[in-house]
Amino acid sequence: MNSEKYREIQAHVNDGDARRNVGEWGEAKISYLKAIEEFSAICEIDPHAPMTAEQVDLQKTINGRIEDVNSHLASVHLDKGRAALANKAWQIAIDELEEATRLAKDDNIAFLEEVKGLLDKSRNGHRDAMIRSELTPFVDRGDDFKRSGNFGEAILEFQEAAKKAAGLPEHHKYVVYIKNSLTECRRSIIRPYLAKINKACHAGKFAMASGFLKRAQLLLDSTDNVYHAFLEQLKEKIQLNLKEDEFVETEEFEAPEVWEKAVKDYEEALDLYSSFTVTDPFAPAYTGVNVFEDKFIDSRRKLGKLYKTRADRLRDQAKIEKAIRNYKEAIRLLPRSDKLFHEAFKEMKKLRAQIAVP
Image 1 (cartoon, helix red, strand yellow):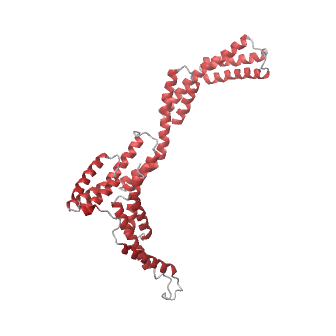
Image 2 (cartoon, rainbow, N blue to C red):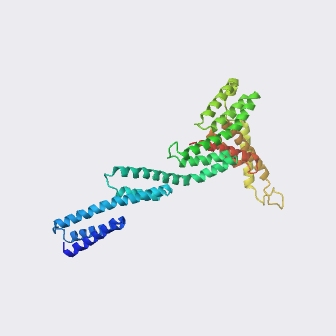
């Protein structure tokens, strides 16, 4: 190594020392790294050139200075990370604390443990913030529906939120809030059924009470031990008063002939409605209205009503998927202006809220 290069390296070291003495750790490290770069450049030019003992000592000194500066920089990043954590700037805290970990000495166990604890808190905070941003739209809509009394819609929203929070621990505040909200909504839907059950029992209509009870049990949260025990007591009371023939469950209220006639009438009306044209020789003159429209709508309504009746029966028997399929058919057939259409749609929404219970 020629004397000129040696002087350049020494100048960088002296500059680094001066900055280190006044606590300018970052600038000091830059100067030391420049000195190391000069050493590396010389070695690349002539890798076999011998180094004097003085030069070897200087290189060791520089590496020692860098290690010392890194320790101070680690403390600086720790302070920045701690401040960012206090301000809930999670990503900044993570970046600063990871840098502190990288710069710290491997044998500084106490320092590394402190950084690790803060880093874990920062990562948890960042995770919660990300999950919260995903959950908030669903939870907010669920809360709005709950406040307005639309508990079925609220359940669907809270269930979506529960899916988003699936990776969180059971005791996490988000999970607890969502589960409590689901339980509250289900109880709100169950309470009217309890009143109907009580009224039916007092009237001696235990078969009807049994149907209401099954609907209530469908809505019950699996973790709601209070309501579960209460409904089981009601079930025992009702079954003691049920007659033997009332235990038999069928999926049809109407006879097969009724279904056959309804389907046949609908198909005939559909054929007539579809084949009608304004040039039909049997159509009244000067009219563009389909004269078979009323008959077609009436046949659709009758068939839709049968599907809804069957769906209600299946719902009472806790056959959820079959009930939903029949409600869908009823909705497809019933006119939108019909009261039965809205009843079927409402019941289907309630049942759908029970299929994907988290």
